[in-house]
Image: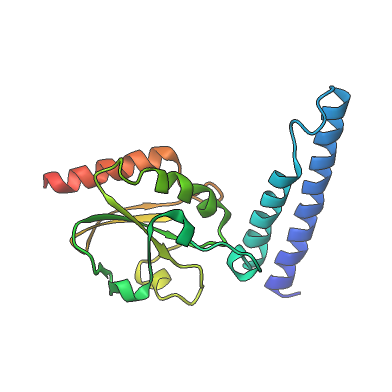
Length: 185
């Protein structure tokens, strides 16, 4: 059994457990007079999409109707916007390296985009949805989302996501602190 088949097998097991959990929560809700109040089909579908991405490596972007980053309201960067590890932009940028198939990244990007105009940084997304993107290796991205801070093209800081969790609001606050510290020097 190859690794891809093993992951699909694990995914099917987790999906069955997820469906059972959804049924049990709905059953408990009905018994307590709150049917469908605690658990709804949409979160279950979102959870299934995230689990599918994690266990198979096949993500939302490769499925019909998959999401890209264009609707985030942020500048979307690709490999042509970089020369080696330098960003072809002047100013102070916080660039979120993210893949649209990554569940934690999809949860994080709206929080990241909400900071646009409220932080002393220009915000952008480096699209690394394709596993063949050279940005994975150039920036040694091990997990998405990862934020890298640039000042006039040079790297001045980095916040790497954590497995399953990604990045949180506290990490966004830390992003601003790193940017302010780098201007003080």
